[in-house]
Length: 358
Image (cartoon, rainbow, N blue to C red; front, top):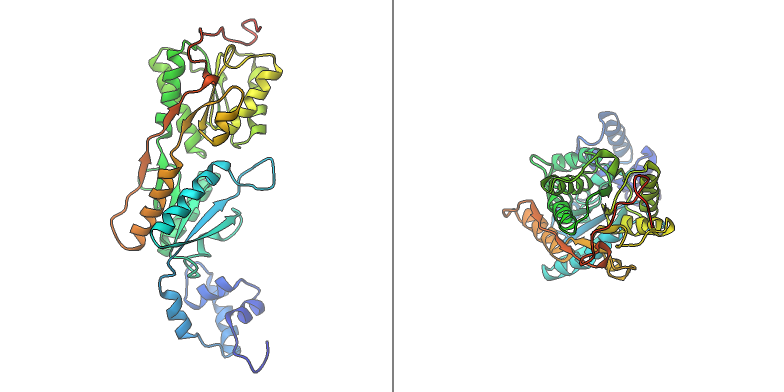
């Protein structure tokens, strides 16, 4: 530090071996910083004769007219680590911010980082939009801390009673129910599901539960052997899950996949086993990403309205920032039927060790 210059919070952070954001929180007696660390930081501040710049502090407390969009890492076959579904939502969020007169700060986050305190707490943004969450139970702890801080935030994801903060999400159970009802109406008898059935992945689980609702209503099988757990929404994960289904030797004539990318990988596995889509096995995905219309055959999928979702996320967050009434919302998805589910074809004979394949 130059002796003629005024000490800064960065000087304190360097001496204490912590981040500047931690120094800022410690000097405000934030409970997010341990008492031991706060004491050490205050001692260093006294040694350096550090004085808070009140003008700058007041300026930071004013609205930044900026929202922060935090994208969380997701397993992908390339180095983007961003779920393509969220990229389709990005344009809608950006346009919605512009219409409301807000700038948008976009940041890629890792779950290991202290993302829960780095934005509104540092006055970079007035509120946070969160896309992606990984393990729901692990993320919930950080969301609880955002609530304790008084941070304004909204996330895309499942809507629960007594949840931390507000969220905008799809009715995933209804989406799964639409898929099951449609496949049953086409005469498909044994529908397998490639996707997680775990509380830690509530959106994927709800899609499976909705499928089961429809199949049970149609008096069709929902045996456990027809469900393969898939956590990662990638083509590779879908391919591996379909191979695992073949290894079980169960008969099936349709696949409902928890995402379009899983479905695309699964279709590759079906092709390698000499099966035709949809003649032998109908395939349905979820998300209706742009690529779904260009697979061979074009993929039937459940559309999540990303345009409306982006608008709702921005509007809900700004209402919360302004102290206006704001609530979580569940959006209704729509089944988009294409050739991969075999609409108009005669019902297929289930494939597997218990039946002959063509």
